[in-house]
Image (cartoon, rainbow, N blue to C red; front, side, top):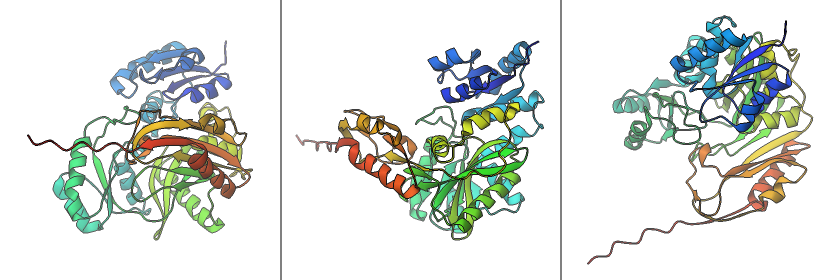
Length: 422
């Protein structure tokens, strides 16, 4: 009788499938029709192509897979798969029975704020958007600026900054435009299902990458983020973050308290947090790996493959980390951005990509493409990831490559010609 373990993997990318196959487990992959790749069709032992974000659709397929192949763990390492995977794990009695509840309040930013308030942890003023008047009432309570965001999307989609009472007509129009629809940038697998208002949190932004083992949280890395006040796009990440020891301890301690309060016990997490004038305040968190090349940065700087831990731990195939790792190098990602217009030429990408200190270099635009004004992560044009002995050196190198070695020539869009009066 075979002792080979079986994972029911919900969604994900090729690298997620590869980590499970490297463990020698049987991979039953339930993948969304829009996300199937040729590699996954070859690498997975079983492939079921269904819309796994629809519970009534995915449940019978998952139950059939369990009946035929047996399932030792249900896992997802990608945002849209977290809720269905946790719900199936609870249904199949492969968890403590509370994973779906935890996953829901991690994904839903309003539930997260309510949970933190119940647990006595720091939270900004927050409220649900119900109508136009609720914006006025919140502004009077929390002051300006304040942030309006969808409760359960990702990558900065739909975030709005309300600057003043006179700005609220614009904010309300944008809320009405987006609410109830699918995200139209990047992944279309998320539905905008309501908006949250919260007071603006000042201070530098970081993310904390952690692994949890039966309720014990181990911080693997603190990521320094490059952001700007006039948009919500993340412009870069640096690992390890340039922080004094006391600041690092404040951030990591706040995140460990946060994860415990939210009920997270196992697996990877990615928590975005600001070191504000009031102390560390969590912006949002995810019970999954960080995106935007963060896992590559962490592996380059610390030698820890967080995808491999996320795959192996639910199956009991890896020992827990005993303590936070020490950095052995630094790694930085910088986004490629340019002023709005029409791309006329692109060059330098291949030359940058083959450098020994470059892990990744990619650009998504070609001549003739439109460069949009920078609003969120979907407006970026590409990225470069580098390694260096220390963070300062890596930052300097990456900014040079993005700004000087990669050439993207952009011509301003011509203004429409004035109407001719007959």
